[in-house]
Image 1 (tube, one colour):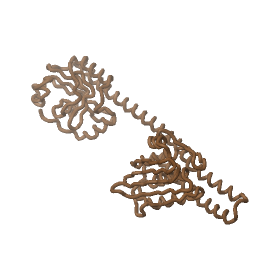
Image 2: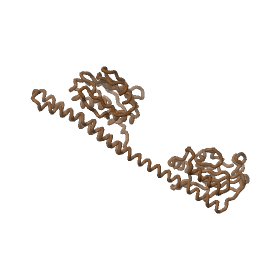
Image 3: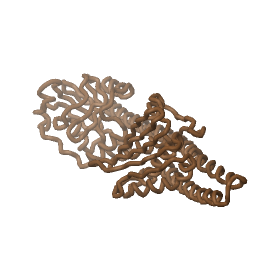
Image 4: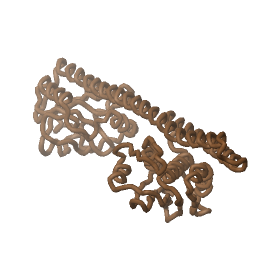
Length: 401
């Protein structure tokens, strides 16, 4: 048999079939019923729904034996797709020069009769065929030809229905994701903004009291100004992140100076760190620049700093980062109260919000570390935690450089 010429629309057809999600799938009752009915109408033992790829044809349904695919070069169906007729029919393949030497004719199942109808998608692409075969010579009646063509149209209708259901599922999933994302954005803003504003209010209340000298009041007001600047920067970051999530613009990759970003986060956190007599130490390599999303890095460092300050008093918080081959390793360490293994495992597993009172009985929503883990994941990174009760905690982050 002469090899069927590879069609120029192969790539388009393959894309269409993967869009329908019908290649390499398990058998489905709806398609099996169609091939069984085709066999009965045409009075043949073999019927197939055959979908063609570049080097093979996949049998989405068959009524003969459990063979899911066959080689395309020995395929009757490949020739069917090259014809202009609505139905391609061969009465006796052993007498047809195109197929007389085909293994399908010479060996099992010893095909003699073949009739196939192209399966044409709504985009006009021939995806495959609905075909019937027999080991005896045969010719279809007009009624059988009509019935086979009607069944071929039903196959396409089933595929279109599958596509509609797929689109509906995707829309439903997208609506659910948008709703969840909106709730998460609101929670993030509430979590990250409430705490610094509460600290700012405390500073203002102190300055109004008669317990402070003029110099102490001036120092607190300077601290309040720095705190307010940090809160405004925080809001800008969160609004940008929220916009990115809602509009699905994805990760924005830029050259990020990790030392500079860490120093800026230190400035924002200086007021809350000072109120608990904590020292902030920046040991990030000063020449460390990586291609990543700046908003994501800011969010990660800010939240890990905030978490460290919450659970540390009269101690230190250290941020360290360096490049190691194709990775950037970041760690945020504190000398605080630490956490037990149960909480550590739950944070890493993302099982639920973990909220614990800080050293000054600070109450958090438990969302900060959840979203930090999400950001790290979105950057293709990983996070691990080491902690010892009453000795401190270290968050280790590994990102692609």
